[in-house]
Image (tube, rainbow, N blue to C red; front, top):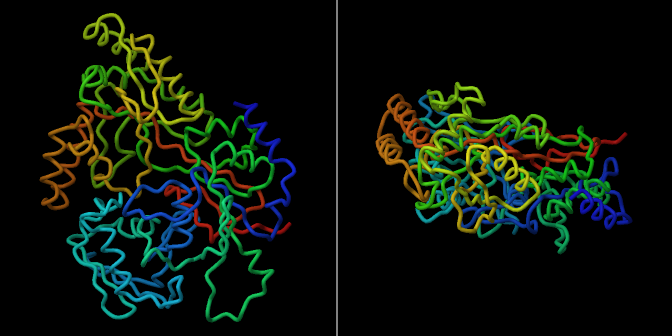
Length: 481
């Protein structure tokens, strides 16, 4: 793998122009497909689409570099004392076709994201929204059934961008589009006189969507100042390219990084097997294999206390690793005899092969062999690797409540169904009950928190690792020496 990266670096050597010139435009490589905006109500957005959507189509609010909420299309807002009403004042803005933005258009965009036919992944988390009302041309109210502290964080997510007929309001617009890159410039400010062309060039963001190996090689050759969209599957490329540790930033994001049953038949449908597998994983050694600083393990579904209750712990959590492995080996022998083979579905990438090798070495001594297959292939277990958009227990619990999951918990389904109509205190109790049911059935085998990484040139300012994993382009600047 190291030789493959070095070969790519050699191919990039000699490309004209260094993109790390102090005070100049910022060139960004985002790991994934071609950089283009996407419609989150119709399909999932990969990392380049998230970056482009956030750059061209802002929401009512947005995340700053540190992950805090700041104004965007809404210049300010207020929350009523009971927490049931959020009132936003829309700043004077234009769509990319030059027409003025109205509160009614903003309301229409938000309603489309929450409509029954929407496939927006944030829609289930916004079930407390009761009405979205334009009060005047520039004032919008969102009324809730009950207080939702994480509402602003959801509205700041690029998947809740405000759009109209495929257009947005900035903070950038698409100035030039090439097959290899998209050139973005800041949306003009009507209150500012015409800006010099050289200043506009320096304010550009040049965004590429490309494979991880090419993005890392381009960065190593100093032809990109920033790489976004890294995950566990491509992290080994960072080591192979000998990227300086100071340039590697790990986002401390919460979420799910673990294994779930992939079908209703086969050995993984057996709860005892899933518990044995969960017990036998050496999570600390897994992180050591990757060598990613600030990446943390996980043994629970929840990352910590959410919605007034503590995450459920497995009954084996207090045992030593040696005792866990011994118990797992005994369970396999008692229930399955000699040896069994599991088909494990992981994404492509060197990190996935590293994960598969580690799990194979942990499970082989307890009598379980691993066969690595692609994510779309028939499998017994499949990896789930997803960042939580906000601290909402429902986001963690819902996938196991007999919806799309091949195996699910009826107890979790019933608890969540009652929780929809319960008060806050009762809902917390029901969520805790649902969490315990998932853990008892071991429907999720936790491994770690999601690994999300970026490469940041030393002279690039306005970037900070944060718990959201979002990194807005408009905070970046290439500092002069």
